[in-house]
Image (cartoon, rainbow, N blue to C red; front, side, top):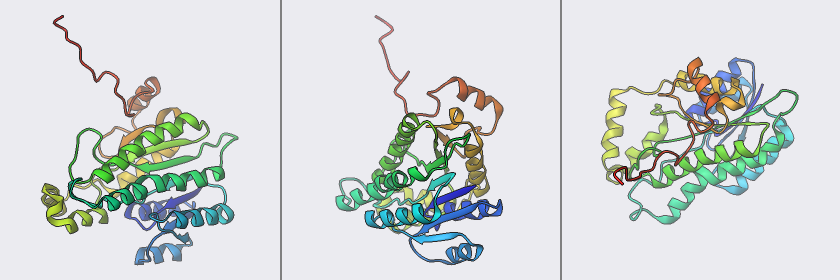
Length: 272
């Protein structure tokens, strides 16, 4: 198996790289800044390329390098994420807000778009594209509007791509509260984060995170499943019964499950 991980230097990206390298996979990934973890991946023989997902030209350059030098892939995972700008919409800098949408959504789609021609499809092969959801689908979390909107757009985009491209699985996973460095952005925002500051601080003290091993196992499960089971769907790593036979049967029988829908969310006056 051959995998490309966008932002392999992220906590989830790095964990996936180590996990799949341990299975004998060939791994390539992008990193924005060097770290001890990146150096360890380099020592393992993971092919690393610098890329900044906030810079369109940087993404185009790294995609060209990956297409020319790494070639075909079976799994493409896109991991970059930022909560910033944290704060109420009317109080944040709108240019920062727009750049967050680009980093968390449009630039990631540019990365996928550029690498899709190199997917290894056909003759029984069904490559997988995995992206990551966040909170906000079921309520309206405050002070993270750019991040939340980007994640909701990702959910719908995976469904759209699944509908358009029949030889590839497009899956989006919601990892829940995973102990990663992204939460430092809430702490750095201070009072601009509102009640989220205390909520995050308490979580860091009390624990109760989604185990990284469960995130890795869910990725393995999604990759192993038929397209009709997982394609275009949004799974919760922490809460869904993925991997269990009854859910698989239910998904086979309901094309709308785990997708954004307005269906059956309506009202009529039963008294008339």
